[in-house]
Image 1 (tube, rainbow, N blue to C red):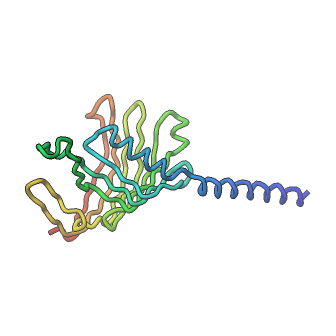
Image 2: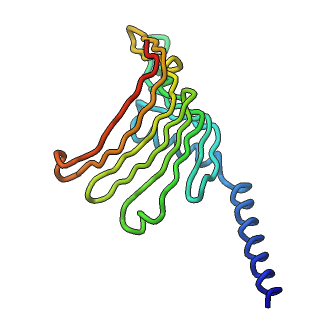
Length: 192
């Protein structure tokens, strides 16, 4: 009896391992990255997304590396260049971005996602959920280096020094905004 139990467990374990290896080896990373870039540009052609690599993460989730969000402005028409090229300016660069759909809340009719982003030598992790009653947003920010993200406009640039940390736990009511609750805490260390 014990022999059959061990054989069944071994067969199940090898099937799961083979399936996971097959998923990682055959995952359509380039197609997924191209689809994400297309979706961002299709929703608003003032933005463009560039993704280095996409891989499965904590099923059912994805982890993308070298993610860059750009603002896109059309160039000026001139006599020499009647069809100007677009000018891209980097808005945000993420070392990695991981998003995972949470299955149990989806069964109950709510879209719910956990996320983790590494950027500016720090990390942001949290949870976002949306349903008929409203939305929930919680996050923790750990040591974002503000010197790596200068604030820029067409006329000026502001370089900050220091680190940003904080947390949030917000519940937004879709019917009555005044009934929304939550807290938001931002901590600046060494801001100059």
